[in-house]
Image 1 (cartoon, helix red, strand yellow):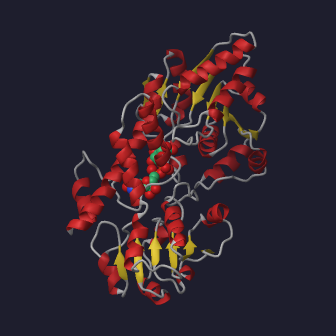
Image 2 (cartoon, protein in one colour):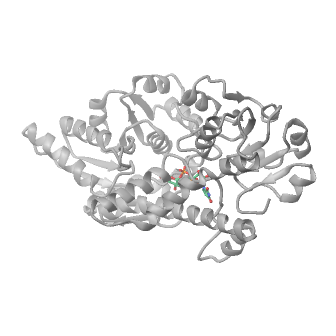
Image 3 (cartoon, protein in one colour):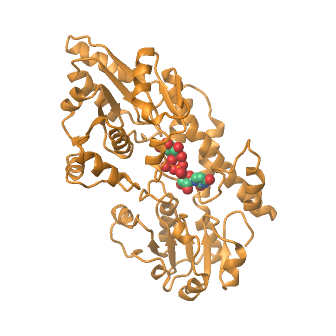
Length: 441
Ligand code: UGA
């Protein structure tokens, strides 16, 4: 099948590469010439395990091409995926200008039946606006051409996106046209084996499903973070509590890890956007607001613990940070807990020596060269002369360190662990003070 994907960002590239991998002809369009040039010369603008090989393989096979030519894009694919960004507006609602600009381009150049697939995370009612924009543009051309707009939200996790696309646990399709539903069923057939994973529904329910899923997961995390603060105050251990409740299959073990707050391009943005949708229709979203507030407070917790440990005297201190990305296996630092922490440390007059397996270049892009941020290529070198090690992201290579070597390298032998990676005894036996989340000192 011929497929066009507008937006060669994270979602667009993964979707394009995976659809090409099963034999489709995919044309990826982006307005950013430098991004398209990079892709056409064999580069990949983001870090995602396996994506570079998948793109290279399908480019070589002639099934995956990249261009800035949006008109060619409209002519190419029966399926026209919209996978452009929906950054938050100032008030937290999703900014639809890029989505609607693609709709307008499609309307301007449509010559035959097309299925427009909303893949970007968009508020309820966006498919109607896409439909309206295309209709208006067609009317301005004095034309009437049949097309369908479908909502097909993506549920990819950064770091596991290819696996998530190739072996989805569900494929949500929102459409009111049974014929279109069948065409999408055919498109997704290679990913829909063993059992039927297609969940067909009306368009608005599909749009809301995406927000509901992310808001539910964010709620689980904020709940555990709140509980971890209570556990610490009452003399309990949140890690024991976590295992104790996770064994109930109605609760489950997943997404109940306390930490230093959720980050990334999705949870913070989507929780806010859903809350904004609710207030927009006159409904006060009390729970969603609390989920966001708890997360904001949690992102400041590590700093509060460090500040307290050093009696509010952080000026001139140096801290080693392990992990800058918002989670392991990505270089993405959007809304990462490391950012708020570093900014607070700098404000208090401290210096940061940071190591991350892949995100140091991203940190350099965000913060530039500055004396209070020293980016290190080696985790142990980051510790030299530091007044403590702070673990912010749970990269697997941090899980079994040499605690004695850490104690020797540090100027002040204290480990602040924002991800509860270690057994208290292993750390303290090596002579380190261990400060973690929701447990006793
Ligand atoms: C999330 C969802 O998990 C995906 O299903 C969804 O498709 C995606 O958003 C999206 O909307 O595009 P992602 O943002 O890549 O995926 O990352 P997650 O693995 O969900 O982690 C989000 C944040 O929650 C991270 O900062 C992580 O450290 C934190 N987290 C996660 C916890 O603090 N505790 C947990 O138990 C789990």
